[in-house]
Length: 166
View (cartoon, one colour):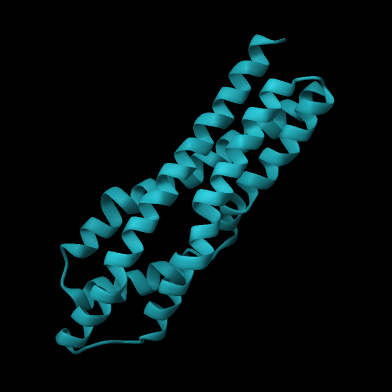
């Protein structure tokens, strides 16, 4: 049971770290870099990013982080590690409420609208499309970043507490 719990908890930590890092990278480099570009370039680049991110490696972290954390929480509970379980469940909950849900209700619809805008060659139209996208998308990504980092910290704290109780 110990090995399975350690595997699940370690994997939850890794997946939380992956997704926190991804959202962080968007907040501190991708969106600021695109904002510094011409709007037609920014739109075209973000359209491609939105298409390419839909891949198994991304989904493993995006969906896997809270699921694996929940499995680790159940395993921790079943081995009498209540405090560690509560922390890892809290990490999963913070991630789901602060990153997963906003992604589904805000960022994905904005991404879909951007992709649906198609190939834009007119600079004025590109500026309109980007102005309708980035100022709405970025603050929600900052929330996703904070929630993912909080989920990562709580998951790490769960492992720390578990190690201290062994």
